[in-house]
Length: 110
Image (cartoon, rainbow, N blue to C red):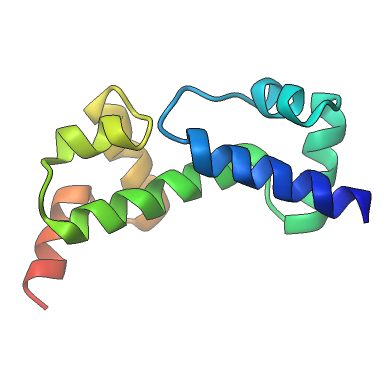
C-alpha cells in the first residue's frame, strides 16, 4: 500500500515538472526515499524504468502539442523538456519510429 502512495507521488512529480531537467534523484528526494528503492518499486509496479516513464510522458505531451498545431517543433521540444531540438527529434523518432515533423504532417493529412 505504501508503494502505491509513493508511485502516485512520483508520477505526480513527473506530471508537474516534466518540462524541466528532472532526475531520478530529484523524484526520490521529493518522495523522501532512496533513488535505488524508487527505481526498484517503479519497475516492479509499472514494468518500466522511471527514466523511460519520463521519456514516454514527454513524448505523449509532445504529441498532444503537435496535434494542437499552435507551436513549432522547436517550441514544443523546449516545452516538453528537451532544450535541444535535435535531441528531442531523436528521442521522438526512437520512441515512435517517425520524426515529429512527419508525425505532425501525418496527423494533418488524416
